[in-house]
Image 1 (cartoon, rainbow, N blue to C red):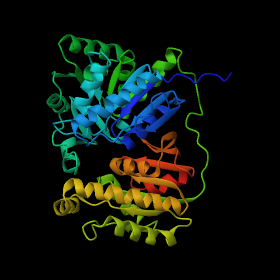
Image 2: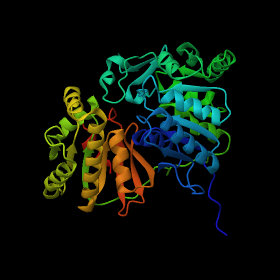
Image 3: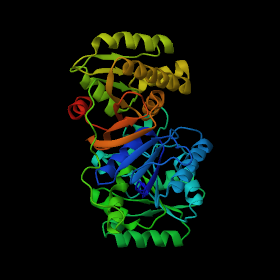
Amino acid sequence: MSAPLPTPLLGIVADDFTGATDIAAMLAARGMRAVQTIGVPQPGETVEADAIVVALKSRTAPAAEAVAQSRAALAWLREAGCRQFFFKYCSTFDSTDEGNIGPVAEALLADLGAGFALACPAFPANNRSVYAGHLFVGTRLLNESGMENHPLTPMKDADLVRVLGRQTTAPVGLVPFMSVRQGAAAIRDAMTRLAEQGRRFAIVDAVGNEDLMAIGAAAASHALITGGSGVAMGLPENFRASGLLPARDDAMDLPAVAGHAAVLSGSCSRATLMQVGHARSLFPVLEIDPLANPNEDAMTQAALDWARPQLGERPVVIAASAPPERVAAIQQALGRETAGALIERTLARIAEGLVAFGVRRLVVAGGETSGAVVSRLGAKRLRIGHEIAPGVPWTLAEGTGPTLKLALKSGNFGGPAFFAEAFETA
């Protein structure tokens, strides 16, 4: 008889595809075999991993739809045997006053029969920190970082206690930095006091990795944890200390994949705009302009006609990224939702064409774009490999036909030379 599959330990519900690879990379780097599923797997489907990340496309969905998708993911993860659960959202707390972070977190907490969960989006490796309940991007408050101009989820308030409080039915507390720096026991005591006061959620301050490790230790017995990938940093050690997770040094190993390379960029973040600009001096770059040509078929065909003769030793870059004023003009001309959907569909179809041309290593920038591309390519699972930059690993796609390596990059992640660095490590 064959040996039974190991029971997964940690189940993660992620609200977008790049965020899912982000947290999976965090766990894999700390010795957990991590697999990302594309959407909720079928009932009875098994996944061999220590951590399973269910990647949803729910960040900008209507709140009721996001809640329904997230509850379905949680139900599958519970059936799979996971012992602890995590709701992963962006380290910039992307949301609106109507949701989706608060409504989803409340629904998951209720389904688990739990009374309290922490919320911590801090990710110091990518310059996200939380102090006095306020989210900073580098040295700037969130609402002064450029996120206030985000085309889908503009963040105009850095006070996360206030933001989350507007989305939930119970008051939100704060575990201040002074308690966090005293260590896991002090954090645990602070959270207990807040729960006794009727708080169902608490923003937890964190400015360094040592804070995240202490928060993880303090939450070892929590049914649900919510936050960015940073706060998952301390969770593998909890499982290891309890004897459930063996020591591993091969959790991130993936096979080499030969073939052409390409970048598809739909993100309009400052970081991605810098990366596209840097790539112009290194690689062939084509910019798609839906304002000049808002026809999906024509844009797709033009991009593929341009790309085919360019494919060779160097990657090609196809970008629909644009600065805020250009995004505003496109949205005004085409409609906000129509413009976003048009770009996502076009880039996904281009990805399909590039794979047909022999592209086997593909970097995709932007959460919504990544979701559209992975779905179009038919990937069912992503096995997580080594990181290119903090929060962005290479992955091996399963279920796509030809073997593909994909890197799904959150718009805000990576340095200016990220695209070049990605293919140096593939």
